[in-house]
Length: 288
Image (cartoon, rainbow, N blue to C red; front, top):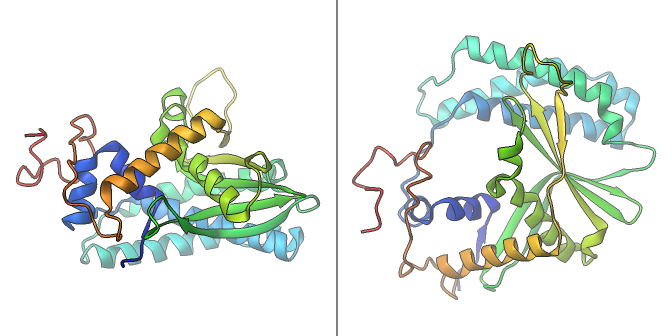
């Protein structure tokens, strides 16, 4: 028997393009290209999560006294060095980009501290976990689902899963209707309910979208931090869970090994940012 784990990112990739999933996981053609967004997003996560750890486990006063500006800078440098090593020592970000993202990150931090009470209240809430791990069996007993929740808050018998997303300008109508973005927390809600053996109604989900920049010369009010709660009713939940089960059944045999007999379709509408788009020997953009 083979004990394997699958993450949301695997499921999301499969839903977008099964062929890309096959190239990446079965054929091991991993083409990793680091970028400034990955550097900044990881660093901002670490900065806010550090603040929340201190706020909930020590005090608001100590958290507010933290030098988050220096932390963000340190985390960005550390993350860049790590990805630089993974990239074979090839530089992939300019100093100007690092500075621009850092300066805008300071605005996010300032806004977060000012409006933190709208989301995180030490008087009524407790911190259940940062990067809270869920691991549970799927429809295949030899394939486990694994997830790490950015922030899990408990308030009485209720829980809220917060996912931190950095974004250039926030989520508009198109992004909010894109299930490849929104179904992550819907799936996590279901998994958490199963893991804790509690009703789905006891779990809320919330994306906190941290905007790098605001629109200029507009007549409507803007927020540096955008909160978005995706639909997670029974119909939506069942559809996403069904799709996840299909992914597991299509991609793995009963012993947990890869199912190489599956027909992995190519989605020619998902090629723009695909690392294999310029490699015809791996993907000719047709199903023949």
